[in-house]
Image 1 (cartoon, rainbow, N blue to C red):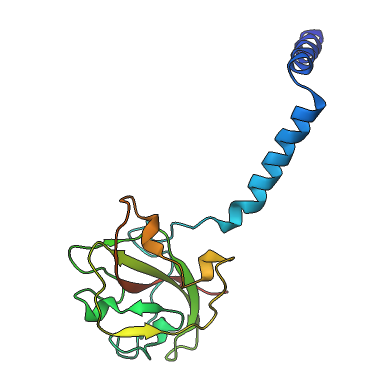
Image 2: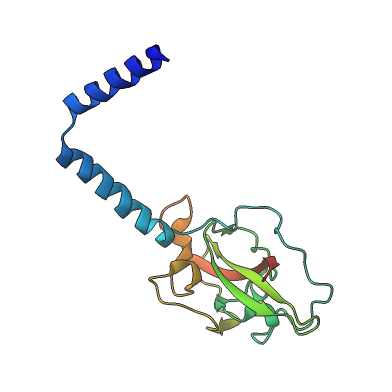
Length: 174
């Protein structure tokens, strides 16, 4: 074990010659500040092609109505009225990879489902079937649960306009 002791001592002494206590504390402070801001970053829930959770057995209601159960935390134009569906973007638009989430209760089975609200981007606003339900909406300080954020800004192309919003089931709430 002598070689391990020599190696660790020489590397520690070399590090001590190159750095000071102030620079080590500054690096530690930067790391802690960065770690504290990590929950504020958007999450790419829409990047998966298939949702993680199983769809409910019965899907009651009209997906083109604002009263549809999946739309409990939506804010925007419904893609079902704009050439898409409740979970798919219309042709000519791209689904934003970052989303906000909500938890909605399915009235047919009484279970709560985690819903990912993805904005469809690439065309001007649809202008049909506007729906603004804010159940569980939080302030912009918690962007993953806020529906008042421009989620198209997370798209790869810059300055993509918002078109409509989808409501995808990503799992059952526990």
